[in-house]
Image (cartoon, rainbow, N blue to C red):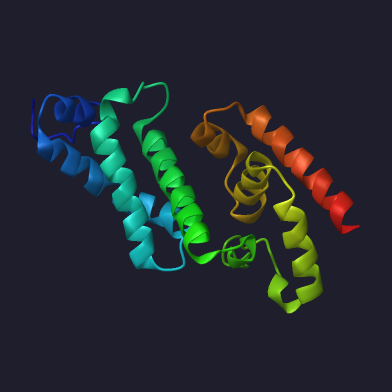
Length: 182
């Protein structure tokens, strides 16, 4: 193979499976920044975000043979980081009795949000109470699309479902939130 061109993710995956550990290092270098950005959405600091990425990369290296190539390799890695982020939040919740209130909905998460919900405590409590009543898949759909701002297609791909599934989960979540708030 020519050294003048960069190997694709697929080529790196194949090389790693065949025993080339440097191939996985190249994968890590290529995707670390994007994966860290995703992980930061689940944590409150960069150190914890790096732990989430590290956990996801450990999972990736040990289960890379299960990657089915039905979607982009970066999407598979993204999903592993999301799963590690969920695990981080669940572990933290179990360890510290963390509640959904600790997931701040900040204008920085989505620039479309023009206000800070913490300024309106009664509304915040009502919304958080309503969010707690949603199913986990509905809560994830509305949070990832409406709060974080991911496109439906990306959320669907990361969750391994069709975009219409995420759209209907989000619609049901919105309806339940409206009923609970108004």
